[in-house]
Amino acid sequence: MTNQFKYAAIECDNVSKHYISERALDHLDINIKTGERLLVIGPNGSGKSTLINVIGGLIRPTKGIIRIHGVDIHKSSPEHRKTIGILTHRPFLYEDFTGRENLTFFGKLFNVPNVSYRIEEIADLFTIGHLLDRRVSLLSHGNRKRLGMARTIIHDPNVILLDEPDSGLDAHSLDELGQTLGQTLQSKTIVLTSHNVDWALPLVTDVLQLSTRQEALKTSIREYHSLHELRKS
Ligand code: ADP
Ligand code: MG
Image (cartoon, rainbow, N blue to C red; front, side, top):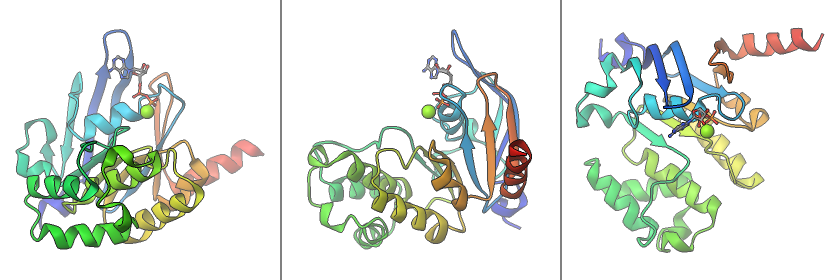
């Protein structure tokens, strides 16, 4: 059995992240299975972005361990980190490069075989073919976001972390992103945050609700809907 299936895709083991004056996450224990798609919701300041950044290895937790396919992310090799694709609030693109130059750069960084073919493939996925030869600084917010998504998955990661991938997208782009996440990336393990719960719920298998008091409740999508029915009645 490969590590991908033997272990949870993502395991947060007693994870806390305290900033100097704020607690963002406190003693969080969650397991995310391979193929699970988890929506993280909660009010502003409840720790959604912190969680994405900690799981992705961009920031260190104050306490606890994050394991990706059984390996401690903060002790893992660059090779192991290639299993992760992360999109934060910033699309992480070079403004003075074109989309194609950006994707080629990141593709080579990750040793993607046949990068030019892969770029065409993901350009189709996010309908950004017509943007590829434009300089990023000239693109709209929504188009940067789409290019940022393409950058995030250029190396075909198994674990995809997306912090508000839907923010600033128009209805048509939201629809397209929904199809990509729900269909094309169906076999991947995905953690995403979104304020647009109605858009995101049909795309996921599980929901993690965070509160500003660092409480966390993880439920399956079915349990989430039942809880909501109960609260309404
Ligand atoms: P969310 O994404 O749910 O809005 P965040 O993870 O951005 O929440 O923030 C959680 C808490 O941590 C907030 O109280 C926020 O002010 C604080 N916080 C986030 N990033 C930092 C930082 N770099 N330095 C200090 N405090 C931070
Ligand atoms: Mg946030």
